[in-house]
Length: 498
Ligand SMILES: [Cu+2]
Image 1: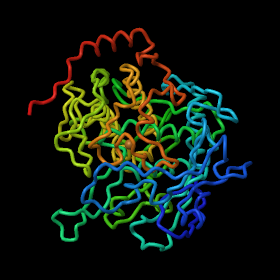
Image 2: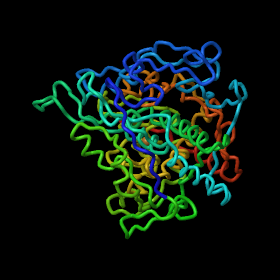
Image 3: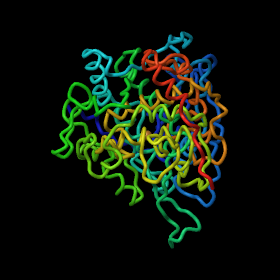
Image 4: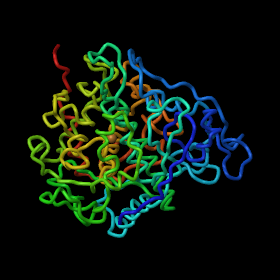
């Protein structure tokens, strides 16, 4: 079931990336103000009791010496807007028409808790309903538009195109945009034109990996709730640890795969396409993936669980349960690595860091907690185990299994937060890669959210997981016993001797 959303290009003046549709007027874009009047109100942002139009505080950008270029992401969202709605009370959203996560009712004063469930515990009917909502998101236009050009590609004042996008692809595009490599000007490198590729990823290989994906899932869940009109909708999780093979990779769940036939995905997502296929070529020519017509001409999503030669040595199996227990035994959230450099996301070399172990750059299977080149375990390991679309960072979210895998990654993060009753101040605030600071605005979410806001237990956002208690321990007595014994018996992670 391949669906098309009408493709419309808009001309607007100025250098702007993706924006709420209601803020695409020339007035909005030239004044850098996005403070719409909500329906039923006469005041910008709704006025007293709902929201006020205020200057945005400048973004916290950790020292990026010698850097110029990609201002869209580095100064997020100031290249586009510097006056936005500040919602009051429990109101939220770019126009203050949503409630903050965890609240509901016309005045957003009624608490609401939702439960994310293990997909294997859901009934056939519930699974079909959920899969139907993913399809509905592909068929529904978003309130946001995405750019087809980078602001740095155009001369000041030159016309710029925006495209409409459907709700599912909007989120797949966010993941591409936040993680894409880009061509930037840097001083002091050895190329004549001072241009080079820089891996500037605002959501991976650094402290913001768990918080960015937490916000991303919550925003996607909210969008799905709106599309489906199901206020209780949550994204189910796929607990892959210890599974002999991918139990959701069949036509009953997220689709089977035919490894011998170009990794074809069977089942209800068989004709879903890879958004931003060929993005590497676009990046090389300094362009942004923004043209949705190309995405529909691109190949279908692919998978080959545990099958590809390339990763066979290390990722022919899913992570073990013991690896998750080891991650949970590490109290330290994250730490600055010795070879830190702001522009290359080098926090992937952090040792004894819960975040790096969970993300998968530091070892958990051998329980050392140390970074090792080319090792990909836990979160990364599952991406690579699945091969195909899921094993390619910028396009991975085109495969719907991505969201079930990330709900599970968030679940492990939540178990850790509850276990140690972690405080918000523990989120790193110094020497972080750009976008990974405690107070960085998360790219490219609009309205803005900071990393530390999402470094809190899930109860702050009105959700929980079906299988854990208030301390993050399994409710099932056998699982609980196994986890407690194992985590308590782990040897402490030892930093390597210099
Ligand atoms: Cu990601």
